[in-house]
Length: 275
Image (cartoon, rainbow, N blue to C red; front, side, top):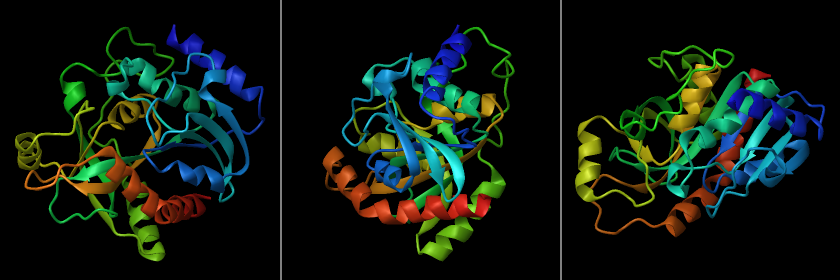
């Protein structure tokens, strides 16, 4: 049934624009201002797209934008959906299905994350090499249920989910634009509560470099459909488990706001090289 719903959403979007995107972008918390850089952008509120959910989190505008960036036709989510908003996983990942059916074969996904690796600093970026899907391992996997072969195979491989060529390219561009870019492991937790000190120490022990509450479900679905994936985390706070001050969403937004120019330069540089 989701395939038919996705096609309904595609038809509604195509009624607004003739642009056929080749890259899909998901803009994480506080990073939605890249949308202002999109040329000849058509903005469609999620409320006008059949079967799209509503983004309820501060820092997520809740619009789909289609246009060009650095000469590349793109479709961008200005705001995403999360488990902690009460949405089922197929609802969270539905827009990625739609992006692919619109023509996108590459997905750039961004997020705000806590720096579990003590070498990271707020304002740094991390390109995701691999992930640990705690929510997915506990059963919240977007592929649970009947499989539709029109989307992809029953048992997709995720051993190399994040494209090595795109990761290398991101390091090259980061050096050019002066952004500090690490490479590491992203762990997804369900949220919305921030982690306890014991949980953060556990995450460090199992190899986590950054922790957040999104991204992984979208990546699983993108790979299910054969899309190339590049994931970039903005480190908004330290999360080693040794901090004396507690993290809050306002601080996350403030760090995201300060990083907007560098994030925009990084994404635009990568797209320029792809073009």
